[in-house]
Image (cartoon, rainbow, N blue to C red; front, top):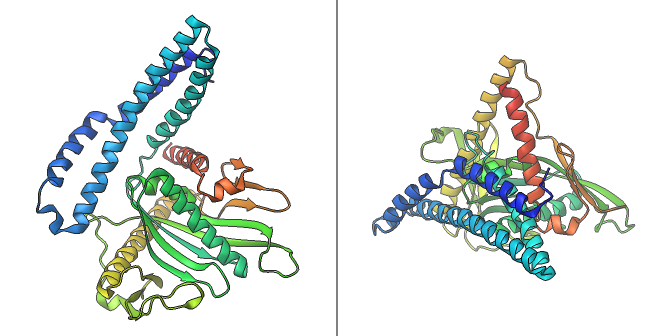
Length: 372
């Protein structure tokens, strides 16, 4: 429970921030940032563009996190001074300003504390997300597109770069599927709780009688493959098809057959990429997506084997995870954590941090229980 006295609460937040810093280790982060700055200054770095982008993204992340820690520490000190000034001068406007800043600090320190819970093997990785329209016809396709926008807006709010590899548009409206990457450290650990089936209930925009429609979309979240991963794919295990990129309504957006679809024959996994103009680039991106999905498949199989040895039948948490109800009332609720928000417009516009935080804590509790 938070302290009732503002000065006491600031002291508690300062102690919590110190605990967070002990886990994140700013000293180590500064050393790594210095090493990356030396690499970034090397003119030969951009000979390997993929590695160069990885270096600059990691450096940007570290510098941002270090600035965030320094900023929080300074703001805690400044807020303490504001409360002391308001008390000595009996200054209500200053006290009100300090109360508002304290509320913001409480939320930001709590969010940073959640980062320390991301300790899984792949949690530090960037994330690869795939969304598929499921049951519900045109409403499901529209819902899938709404979810894509929700995640892209969430990433934009945090300043996380994204790259859309593929969008398969539905005939009437919306999308049948999409695959995109969130290129930020810890994106996978942050977003992996979004994996599963999402359900929307609303008045259908595509029913001329205006009836209520329930539709579903599946969200798949996997970690991006890194050079240290060993994911071997033999050429005789894949089928590669090339086709012309298409836009909404099936219209062509590229006059050449540059889009690439790869089918992994042993598993039936199909991936595609159409965001580049070059067939070679699209093939390389599609292979990276396939490697990520095969790595996640292998990880899941290993986890299932471990659960079987433990006698654990609770490993499959990615079924229906969240309900988005727009009619007859408005509410978004996570069926696992119980967290809910009645501002559906804000949620669909990317304000999902509270859902994500609740998921991370829920997943960590389950992990800690399995480790006992």
